[in-house]
Length: 240
Image 1 (spheres, rainbow, N blue to C red):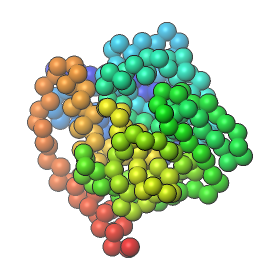
Image 2 (tube, helix red, strand yellow):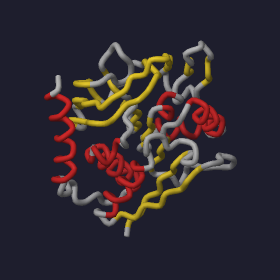
Image 3 (cartoon, one colour):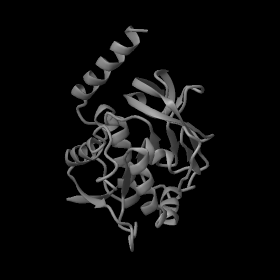
């Protein structure tokens, strides 16, 4: 049986709104393709190497927890940047997405240094952007999820898509997330992957391509997943 390794960073701190569900989705859809998944929980980055990593995942957390996690991630900042540039499939959620940038400015004006891996920055406000969201994506089709964030993130990279209903990166440009090489960053909790099998399969497929593993079948029976997604879409868009 073929196998891949997922490095799950700081699961003890970064699991806001059930983000662990993204790992569960990756494991299950890989299993259906006879691909074994080993999940490595990373809570300490001292002496850590990403050489054996096929996918890495950083979930969301509170500002305090994210700051603590970022201190650990700074130790492997160069490795993370090199992995992203080399096309390693990556999923980062909310705070994990924000702190890839240069800084995060809190509502009281405090500037928290990010990893400065990508040219993005985030300003947080007291009023939060909350609710279900629908996105139209050229790569993934329709994407659904739930957002709850005070941060407004700004960058010029390609995004996951255009916001049809909801907020996205901020409350002005109607774009959501980032899609740079094989890095996906997003504000969508819920978690995102069980609701959006296209994104799950994208991450797995890219990992398989990089490792020389056969990715079959290309399509699974997604009847249940699609029904759940469409129920959300119809409810939101009907209410507009």
